[in-house]
Image (cartoon, rainbow, N blue to C red; front, side, top):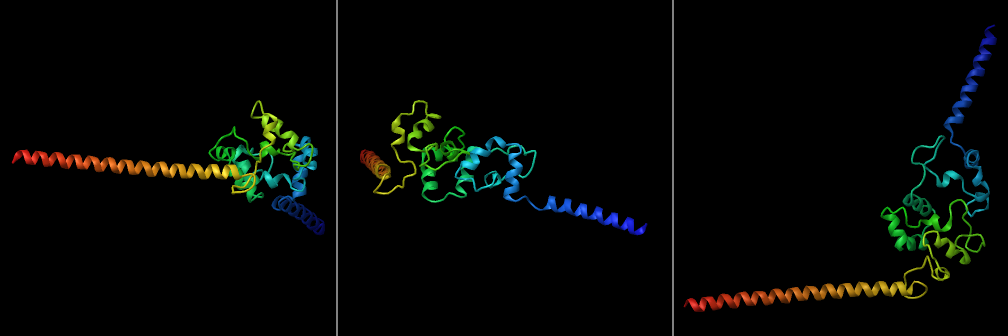
Length: 217
């Protein structure tokens, strides 16, 4: 009888240990993916076809650790950009940060375009893929999602250019330099003008004082 009770106790302890291990050890990326797709199965095909198919859901949705999801689990524009730039570095990141879109998002705009607005969310494809949102023939339609009447000319510009004297970024580089020098020249001229005006006022005051002193004699 004692042996039977002892055996049952070991079984219960073993079951409790398995439950503890299952809770304590985080899910692997594959397990996390399977768990997410139980509810978000409609995204499975998009993810499998995307450039990010090797990632798990929690690689990007780092704030989601269980179900039900906590309030505010959805990423805003600024958080979305921070997620993308945690992997994508260099010229792409720097050029976006310098752009009107990047500056607006950094300042809290929820209307300006984030990385995902142009490249997609779960359906990110390479630029050479015909189904990519950033394929040259699709860029006008992608831009038109925000800019109502985007013309084919939207596809002609360079997006992630580098600001340097040569290459696609040259016009913006020289435009920036022009306005920097223009600003410096205007400020310098304004300072000189103010100093000359002050000098003139000082001479006028001294001359008037001298005239008053002469009349007093």
